[in-house]
Structures are given as structure tokens and as C-alpha cells.
Length: 267
Image (cartoon, rainbow, N blue to C red; front, side, top):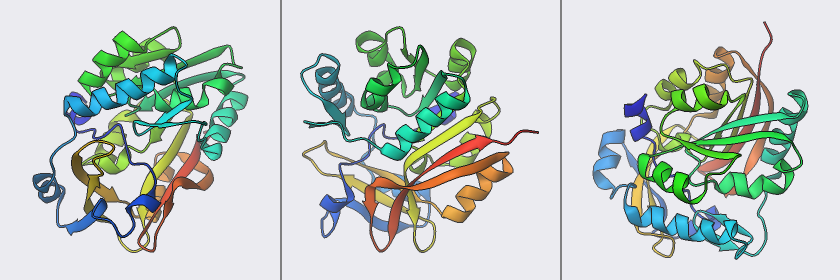
């Protein structure tokens, strides 16, 4: 599990698809393997990325900004209403108990995005599993009685017993995503919430994502999933699809962002 966690790439995606059309930034190229794309990338584990995100999110935590996404500050919360619906669905089905494992959740961007609504529930825990340097920073600057940070899934499950797995803008950055999911889903999650995940409109492919320098300078491998195969995987794992929704990052003729609300089927 620790080796797989290390392969977890950016806690961050990009601002919006629209900014990258007809641009040298965004998604470029079609690679024959993950290794080939990785060789062409600059990587994602630099301290500069962490400090950029940390600085922006501290402003949100301290009330100096309203909302942060991908290290960019906004003057209003940019909700993913379908994701929020999924969170409320999980809370309603679980009698007000919302215990999230946010895999690859940065320093808590999605938690702060939805905090106004989560604060209406008494029994909430939001646990983030991330790269070591993000967890180190999270424990120092952001952890409290609800928001926790963990170095691996096993540690999180033992401590918080989460009933909801959140995968937001993360699976496309994993070299072997389904192997990783096989391990994570050994735990008894009742619900899975997926958001901001890339799907190809043609065929699955591996490309290179190039981040515009106004966010930070980096590039890393990225996968466009085959949506049908992606869905089949979760059905085989015993989950039913409650809803599939459009992601807020948009779509082009080649790809689209999607999210899903899944519930474990009763035996």
C-alpha cells in the first residue's frame, strides 16, 4: 500500500478546461505507456506545489479568502452541486453519520468547499490520505477535531472507520488505478463518490498534463479512462450506480469530466 500511495500524483488538477483549448498547456500528446509519459514529465512532488496550495488554503481557513481550488483563490465558493448532493445522500442514508476518506484530497480543498453544509451534521469526520509532505503540512496547519490527515489507508480506516470513499481528481493520475482500488476496497465502504475524473470520448489513452505557470510549473502523466470499463469495475466490486453527472471542469470533442455516486449493494 505504501508504494501505491507514493504513486498518487497531484493533489491538484487545473482551473478549467476552457483555459487550455488552443493552448500549449493542458493535455498534450498520446503516449504508449505510463513510463513513457513519466519520462517526458517534470514530476509533481516538488515543495513549490505544496507551498502554493498551502498558502492559498490557509487564507480560506483564516477567513481571508472564500474558496480555493487548484491553488487558485475565488471570491465565491464554486460548488460541485452533484458532489454535494452525494455527500448529503450519504448522510441521509447513514442517519447523519458522514465519515469520509478523501484519497488524494490535498490539504482539504473539498472539505472547505462543503464545510458550510457539513457543519449542519454532528457526526462528521473528513480524513485525507496523501503524499507524505502534504500529510506533514496538513497535520501542522489544518488538522482539527474533524479534518484529519493520514499517510496510508490502513491507518485512516483503523482510526476513523470511514463509510464513504471520495475520489476527486485523483484516479487519472495513478499509474495502476485499478490495482490501487483493489487494495482500498478491501475496506467496507458503503458509498463511493467520484468527481472531476477524465474520460475519453474515443478510446482510453495516456497523455501529458502541462500546468500553466500562473498556477505552478509542472507536468505529469494523465489517463483518459474508458467510461464503460471504469463503470464495469465498480459493478464487479458490488456497487450500484446511483447517478453519473458532468464534472465542473467541462468537456471537449476528445474528453469529458464526469462524476459518480455509488452505493454498495446489499447482499
